[in-house]
Structures are given as C-alpha cells and as structure tokens.
Image 1 (cartoon, rainbow, N blue to C red):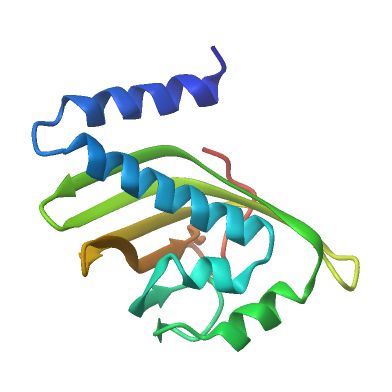
Image 2 (spheres, helix red, strand yellow):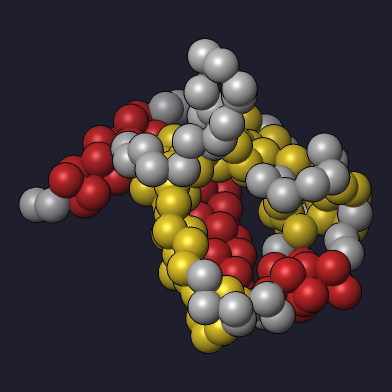
Length: 162
C-alpha cells in the first residue's frame, strides 16, 4: 500500500469509528468534495459554484483577505490564466460530521502551467466547512494557507511537502 493510500486509510478508519457520523451523510459529503475537486481540475467555474453555498466565505491564497458569495466571473478569470487542466488532489483528509455541520482538513496539491509558461507546483493546507442547506450538503467555507518563514522578512514557503 502506498504512503498516500495508507494515510487516507488511517483517516477513513478513524472517521468510520466515530458514532456521530451517518454513513449517508459521510458518502454525500465525500461525493460533493469529489465533484468540487473535479470541477477545479477541469477549470469548470459553474461546476465548482454548484457545490458551494450562495453565502460561502472563502479565505484563499490570493488576495483579498476574504471573499463572500460566489464570483463566477472572477473564478473563471483565474481559471483562464492557466494553460490546460490543473493538477489538484487532497490527501491526509480528516472529515468530521455532527448534525447539519461538517468540516474536512487536508493537504492539497496544486500544479499547472500559467499561460505565460510559468509552472506552479506546491502543497498547501486546506480546510473545507460544509452545512446542510435545504436538505443538501454544500460547501460554506474554505480556508487555504501556506506556512511562512517567521525569521527576517516573512515570506511564504512553497517547497514543503506533507
């Protein structure tokens, strides 16, 4: 078993043992997260937005400090800066559910080539919060971050690996 599979298996085993989780809810949230990831890889703004609440609050790597609501034009403009599909995966997921609220923390990998030829490849931390709205699970919050050097001038560190 690969290191990635073993880590995901451990996380899934821990999740399965928690009494508060309904199997259907767990499966619904996993499917929602998979749809969101697929839409990101394919640069499908409408697909991503269909997974998100209309009132989503996002703390992304790029400015501004926060965004609220879905900005389809802004998301598509960001997608349009990339040449071809994006590589995106999450690993070491920890999904927790309780009632109509859930959250998932993970390491995320993003890689691709910008239209100007610049290649980007890095890991970052990702937390996704979910809520059941009108009977359907939706993403209500995302938080992305990278560590930064705390000595000297604070600079983000993009070459770390989980």
